Structure formats: structure tokens, C-alpha cells
Amino acid sequence: MFKMIITDMGLSVKSLLLMLVYVIIFPLMLDQNAYMGTVGALAVYVVVLGLLAAEERDKVDLLYRILPVRARDIVGAKYVECVLVWGMAMLIDCAVLAVRSYLGNLDEPVHYANSILSSFITMSVIAGITLPIVYKYGYTRSRIIVLFLWLGLAFASPFLAALIDFLMNDRGMTLTGVLSLGAAAAVVLLCVSAYAAVRIYKKK
Image 1 (cartoon, rainbow, N blue to C red):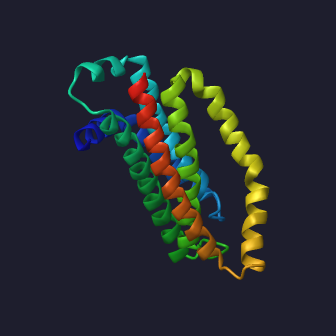
Image 2 (cartoon, rainbow, N blue to C red):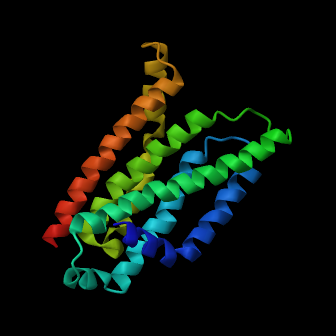
């Protein structure tokens, strides 16, 4: 799996550079850090979904089937790459915000822990739902489904905000506590998603 990840990252140089550009631009242009969840998810979409699109275009799946490569390594590599790409995006994002904060160029303090937890949850939900769909239907056929997924999550934001408000006001939880609970659930979602994606891949 490690060699596959290194190879994928080498093939994704252009996507990684594109990710670098907007991951730097967002914190330079916006004072609010609530967008960090979107940045992390977009980074994964650009890099990892871009890899899946290229693999479909180049029929890499056919090559994998004649090589001694396990399905769980092929699929698992993409999930690890999601976390790695998200992590890189967050490091850059936080570094830019830290510099702006040090220079006194921010109108509000940056709540790094809450922003990172929120971003991880967003990325995990996007990746956890998207990857099994892509492995089931292919990148091209699943693009519309993925589009509606993004729209659905956008419309679900008010309900999630109401749930967070309920847990904080009625259950006495802190925002960090709520987000930590959400991040734990997101890890479980990724594990279940990876298991489902491997089973789907084996049946192809």
C-alpha cells in the first residue's frame, strides 16, 4: 500500500500544486476560519477524485487485476490518501492563518482545534460516502450523484447547526466536545466506508 501511495502522490503533482494555490488563497482572502472544512474536502476532491478519474480513463483497473495487488491495498490507499491530503491542506491553512494572526491581520481569533475537527468531519463524510459510490459506478457515472451529495450536505448544514446548538445548550456540552464526538463518529464512518468499498471492488 505504501508504494501505491507514493506512486499516486507522484502522479498527482499538478493536482497537489492546484490544491496548494487555493489552500493558500482562502486564508489570505477570508478572515473567518469556518471555510476550513470546505477547503479540506475540496483538497481531497481535487487530488483523490482526480486520481480515480485518471485511473478510469487509463484503464488502470485492468492492470491491477493482473498484478499481485490486494483489493484492500488498492482501495485502502485511497482512504489513506484522503487523510494525507486533508492533513497537508490543514497544515498549510493553519500556517497561513498563524502568520496572519501574528501580524495582527485578522479580525477574529482562530479556533484551530474546532476548525480542524470540523474540517475532518466534513472531509470524512464527503470521502466516506463518495468513494464507495465511485467504486460502484465509476467516476464518470457517479459525478451527478456526487454533485447531489455536495448539495445535500450544504442543505443539511442548518440541521447540523441545530443539533450542535441542542447538544451545547440542552446537554451542556462544549463546542469542542461536540466536534470531538463528531470526529470519532467520522472515523467509524471512514472504516465502514472502506470495508464497503473493498467489498464493492472485489465484486467488479
